[in-house]
Image (cartoon, rainbow, N blue to C red; front, top):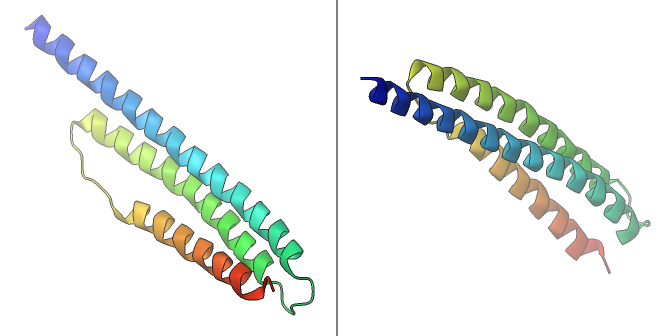
Length: 120
């Protein structure tokens, strides 16, 4: 009986450690998006100074906000998963990942189009 309890405990510990590694991935992604937002804003200023409007600043701000939202969503996901691990249940959530992936791709695509169209 003690052997079963030890196996359960070691499994729970592994799940908590995996959850923490996932949180660190969320943090890396969020910080990366914020950094990319800063680069996009700066690079846009170099592409063309003659174009009216500051599209690169908006795209950079959007990426920085998406990065901040990623940090918040990642922390929320971590705490949610932690509670589920303690209760011995798990319900996957896809929506959080879609927000970050789709948002990042959309903003990145907009910036790429901006650079291609206005770099001449």
